[in-house]
Image 1 (tube, rainbow, N blue to C red):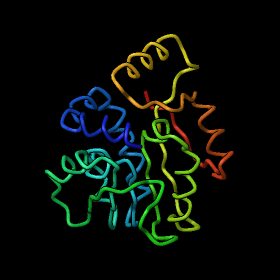
Image 2: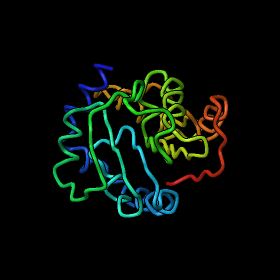
Image 3: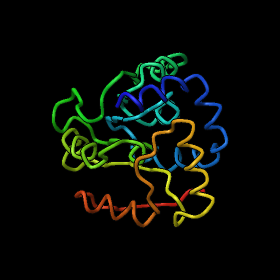
Image 4: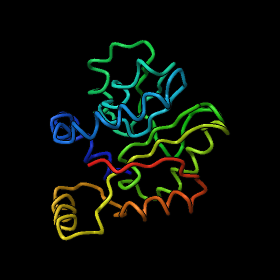
Length: 189
């Protein structure tokens, strides 16, 4: 956990600039998420600087957005203008929320960078209502292609904590093997 936290704390100030290159995919993702969170109580894990939470908050009833990185949460709080959105530093493996607290849990682009993602899914299942929805988009590697391997190599060199390299099919299989029913999936470029 310490290795991951240090990487994210070091990069919190430049995270939003880095993510701009995926802006079109994120806009598409927001459009897919908003109807699911409409008037719901939402938990977002690994929120980073709060990009997703800030873009969907008007649809939700309330959002608790958490991250393990203190510096990411400092960045997220900077321009939060919604009383419905609360940011805090939390460990996704040991959340302080009661069982079945949330209608929707979002863990975006995070399961591939945490050790023991199945443990994170168990904790998510604990805080998610029985009829709740998990939204778990993540970066996948197209068949572990040459370009994907090169990108992963350079990301590792700069300290990016990549723990799982799934293809889209492998990721869906991983979710199912951990007790989740996949009702909808989309590949965003």
